Image (tube, rainbow, N blue to C red; front, side):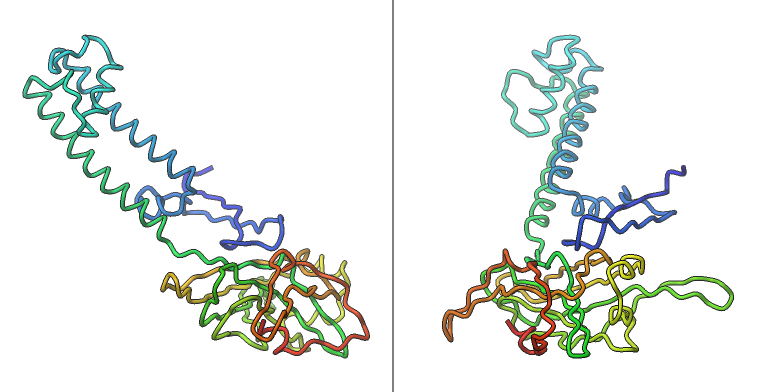
Length: 314
């Protein structure tokens, strides 16, 4: 297989509806591009980042240690033939510590030490900046229910996804966008796919303090019209997939935050509803139990459908 072929088994960032993965395969690009080290350093996980930092640190010291080792007698008190001693002298030089028991004594070792100190200063500045950026990246604490639900009653069908604000304070200017992947076959027999935005009963909230149920009214002309009559077997075989993205402004960070989730057919529960997660204790006191955000229960046929306002404005 060619080296430029990269496979990723990832869903959309931050959250996915279930354990089943949406497979994305690309040819001609690589997941990690060494020509873009800044992006690479920011997209690594913390364990990968620190492991990479350790490897870079060891590699630099090994290279300079070999340079000292290759010229015996250029460092005072360095035992001849001791690669380990040269390695530790390199560590002391890179850190500009200089304990005093070993020191460069020739022009060669002075030049190598000067270059190593300069490299050490660049490494320290670069890693400090990268660690700061990784710590300071805005992170959305938007929680998604594990499953989307479809409520079918009173002749109406609605697809719902409940999300919660994981911060202890309201987010502002929240907007939601729900899309689905549509596959069509042209008369020529060529199949193509494209994303279609689903119309929401409400796609924005000026204040998002607790929970928000995003609702799409499934009509006859909706791309999800099959949900009006589908049974679990039909839904599972449909390959249906919906994607929800949410943006909001975090006032404590003074920055926009973003989160998204993907729900495959097996992540959609038919004729179910979300159990209550918000309890009103008084006119000015509401309690949201985020542990119940994804709890679903059977839809009662005789129960009236919740209004868009009631479902969206918690």
